[in-house]
Length: 407
Image (cartoon, rainbow, N blue to C red; front, side):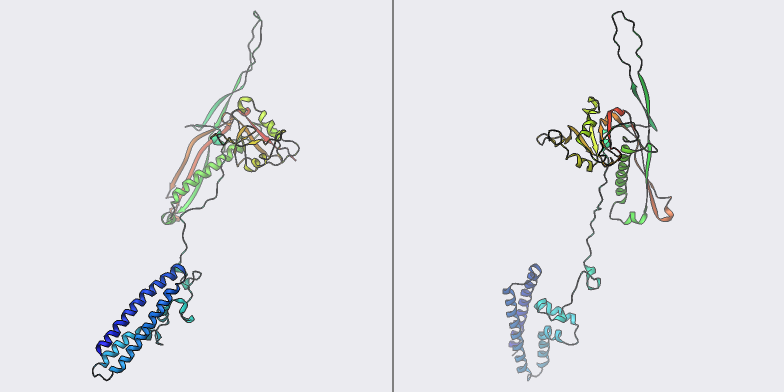
């Protein structure tokens, strides 16, 4: 009898080991594909049937052995061990979560009773939502800062003084004809002037808490340095275009220093003739090295213009030759966001040899002072950035501005 019980126990144990292996395979399929294949489900059902059969055999053997003295206690212990997976989970006193776990492991969620299935969702912290944290992207999304490219086409000088003085010729004499023995008199009219270009200071001041500097996943100091450089470039670019000279550079469009070419009666529109007049208002030597400056919306309007032969005045660079730029009436252009849009009274297009006509003077490049003391009582570190730069028109005749008529 003991051999029969031993055989039944070993058969039951082997069946359960096979059951675990097949069920693990089934769970892997569900995780990978959402469901298990029919063959695996059928195999699992057969093993469960065998396990039930072994349990019936064991019960029969148990009944036959009850008359054996001293063996009944041993048999009850084996019987309890064999039946524990089912009876334990079916007991009324057992935790429902344990029963649900057993059902899920043996049969999968599809075969579980409704009361055993608990909905877990990411929407609520109480239902395990806090176990699915959001991903933190270690990248700062920044808007584009548009910067006027005047520096790239103007003349740039460095200085170690507060200002520079640039002499220029303002008028000249005229050559005169004379006979072989004629009297020669002095030819007058040659004059010069001295242009003074002062350097102006701009600054930015930012307070950052010490804790933010310590805890931030970003390098805040590096980010501030980048932002200082970008915002200073934006400020100086705007001043080079339209600065009034008061504590800032004097821009190309300021005042009447640079000659204006007026538009026609349609004050908010630009015509091909307007641009033709602008181009041919410059001397040939200036025009050969000249560049258009305008904002993007004005460029869009100019791209639609044609000449009297029906040809577009905007031409793309030759694709077969690298380095050739797009042109308007044969001259290159740059998009300059700080130049005004076409409108009544606006100055919407600049054209000229800016390297000869406009000078930029750099005195102090970007300088950043880190001050951990003055704001220490509030837990902040102060960053003070500064820059000194100047800009002036030095040869007005080398440039022209298209100014719209006032409605």
